[in-house]
Image 1 (cartoon, rainbow, N blue to C red):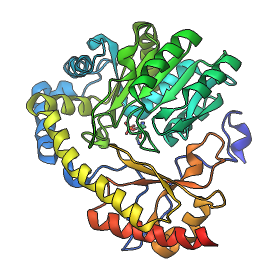
Image 2 (image 1 turned 90 degrees about the vertical axis):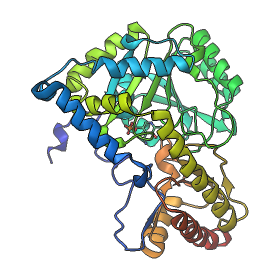
Image 3 (image 1 turned 180 degrees about the vertical axis):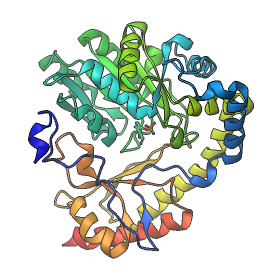
Image 4 (image 1 turned 135 degrees about the vertical axis):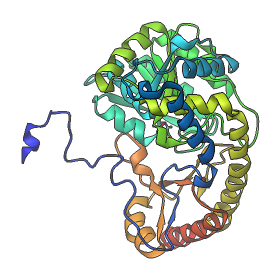
Amino acid sequence: MLSKLFAKRIKTQNPSRLQGLFPESNFSDNISFGGGCPDESLFPSQALQAAYQKAVDQEQAHSFQYHDVKGPGTLRDYLASRARQQGIKANADDILLTAGGQQGLDLVAKLFLGAGDEMAVEAPSYVGALSAFDNYEPVYHEIPLEDDGVNLDYFEEVLKEHPAIKLFYTVPDFHNPTGITISLAKRQRLVDLANRYDFVILEDTPYRDLRYHGESLPSIKSFDTEGRVIFLSSFSKILSPAFRLGWLVASPEIKEQLVNLKLSADLEVPYLAAGTVAAYLADNDLDQHIDQLKQVYRVKLDAMAKALKTYLPADAKISQPEGGFFFWVELDDEIDTRQLLLNEAVPKEHLIYVPSASFYPNWDKNNGLRVNFTGSSLSQIDEGAERLGRILSPAQTA
Ligand code: PMP
């Protein structure tokens, strides 16, 4: 009963968005389409072990010391030059290393949002971002998604009605959870809207390099003329999530405040992780590694697309991602995918997916689900989709 002492913003009556997202399932034939896990066999484990050794050898006892909040300059140099290759004007000083992309989401929310502040999000939106934003008690405006990204005519009407909107959060490349990519024209118009209606865009791009079909599009940040776009990315999906290493590119005015907030959160980026990744990047070609990931993930994406089409009910609306980690499925309005997960999928079919409600600010849309395809083998993809088909078919016809 100590919860009465908690800060008012801690909502004990609501389950955390992230905890409980993945129900326990210890069946030996369990298949998980749940979390956004990379394929473990693709981690460059030996090269990373060698990089760790090199990082420690180079600095000896000093590697175990406190370091500067900004993290290793070599790593920030590398990330700045990678950003420049993508048309983003940046140097090492514009880069802030974060504890995963997740900390970037939290720090940006902490900078812009207080109770009642207005922000816009795609509906649906990445569950971990909503979970980070929830803590600052914003008022959410939900902007629906179309096949080529967020509906900007709708967004503009919302902006006219709610000029106090300060922040818009988007995952423009292979969106989590839907897999959708925002078109070029919409990227440009988003920056125009931000300039005109005076808000900041948080562009979250952990899947950006993982395109398996089609042509890459310029980032939203590359169109930024007023320093209004914060570009956020991460090593989690392209190297390993265990380093907890992400980064953001922001204009000096914003970055300076984010540095202060990072200092008060955790003083600095874990130096052994950052030093290891810096050493890995000095001795290995990250793009070559990403090419290997893409070859494997392309086959998995195609296999999942085929399996979902084969096994799911004919009227299920299945997204058609060209990269990333996820498919999104929308079903008949009466279907409650959370109930199906707990009552059918986990206990009877030993299958995990993520139900749609978690991806909406108000948990109010129950007829969809997210499916991950990178963490499963090809046979699990086929078998898991068949199980999903069995779960959804009787409900569809009920
Ligand atoms: N943003 C998006 C869109 C994600 O999908 C994830 C991970 N699932 C993150 C941020 C956070 O990832 P990490 O903290 O591991 O970088």
